[in-house]
Image: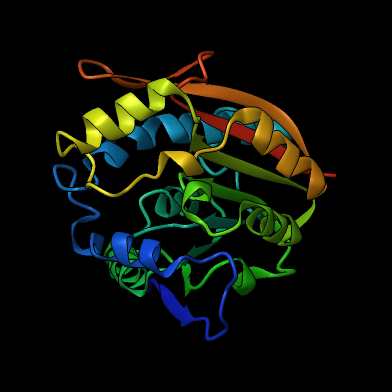
Amino acid sequence: MANATATVAHTADSSILPSEAAHFGAMAGDWWNPKGSSAMLHRLNPVRLKYIREAVDRHWSGDTAARRPLAGKRALDMGCGAGLLTEPLARLGADVTGIDAAPENIAAAQGHAVLSGLSIDYRVGGTDAIAGMGFDLITCMEVIEHVSDPNVFVAGLAGAMASGGLLIMSTPNRTPMSRLAMITIAEGLGRIPKGTHDWDKFLTPDELRLLFGKAGLKTLDTKGLSYSPMSGFALTDDLKLDYLVTAVRV
């Protein structure tokens, strides 16, 4: 029987902003609705998974046709929401932990994992909840722009990685295009809930690379994300809107 557990972290976490946790927790009940407030995440998820799968196969020289390339690996989905990316990681064979600052999201994630027949260790908290756990893979999608201190956050992720472990992160770039597309248009038209983004907290690829370096991480790859109302999201060499980055703990 599936066993999705939820553990509550009782220590205060210096990376968590209570206002951000409350904002995303309010969307917990609608997270798995592909036409609801998280509709854009549903459209983005296949592109994320394609990038993750390619990075995993490249890093561990895996069989690109294998159905469970993460078998025997420990994975963390940091800022997991209600588990939209966490569940596919489990299906790829990983022993998965999902961490989120909003208890409402973890409750929704736990319930959906049980319905999906998946065993996932869900925990409420931030980076303090996973110190020294030695994950082979950490995914962290559209999270760093919502934390109180990116330096502390990245250091916390690095400290939770195994030697040679892989970190895959996505975040918006701080450019005029991202302000227009993600805030003026997407939030203005209600495609993303208003108040989701603070453009001033977006990080450029160079800024993120510096944070990685200070935390003992080496950047391996950076890839852009583009969006078209007709065709949806796609990987691109253009980094002006949003980007994915892969780093290794050295």
